[in-house]
Length: 340
Image (cartoon, rainbow, N blue to C red; front, side):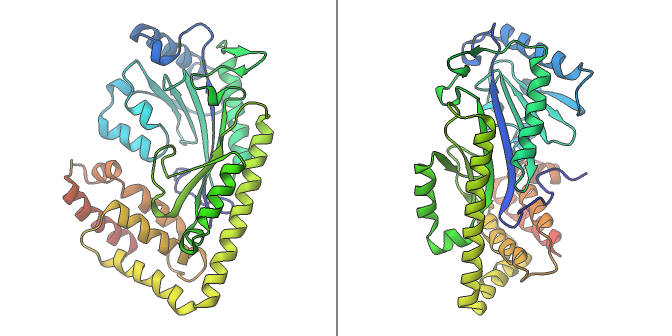
């Protein structure tokens, strides 16, 4: 079965994925950074009991113990966006409960006791929120959350107070980037209270022209208002990106196609290639696929390549630890094979 990160969803020519994340904390335990190992283990047990032993759960789940997991397997979960780098580096008892279809991930003892996130391909924030709300309700049947009538859900970081919700969409914006209009988009988003980050969220780069937009404010707005706001802004960015793509192609079709096919040629023939260069070239090829210029490659194939060329997934696929130079060689080999 394909994971959400490979499937094609609504508006997938621009929107790679949608995510809704809820921050929640237990009423009767200190925040994770103040907890000892015993308290952390008790939190994990209660979450496992609430989810894995529930008769009303709508998904099949599996618990993963972070402290007893191989580093490369943790990194694979980060590359799939199923856990955060913070959880991967956790030192107190921490873990994750992940659904078999990998659309639901419940991080335990990250910055907060619970980070409930639901992920869908394309622009489907409404579906992600609907599923996230169900999982939240399932947990709340057995756990007393830390809640204030004045401030809403109490969280470790004040920016998550209130609803505790973060709604985000991962966008592929090559035309906005190439024309320089991305700077204006970033400024407008900032004024509207929208954060724009790289592929792995906070403090990460926008590799391959991939940008993540999300709400900055969780207090004073309902969950539905936040979801609708990100969806509406996402649709505006989609329209702008599509318009610029069409205009760039209209102005100089030969130059436009040449850039796309040169990138495809390098990917199809390179013997050594880095992650950064791969992402850049795949962005060009994806642009060609989404505009119907390249007809014999599907965007789901590119999604699969993007996942499998990342360091941990690459080493897992070849079943050995690779040096950076060896990874660049094996990455080129894998891309040639997938595109052949």
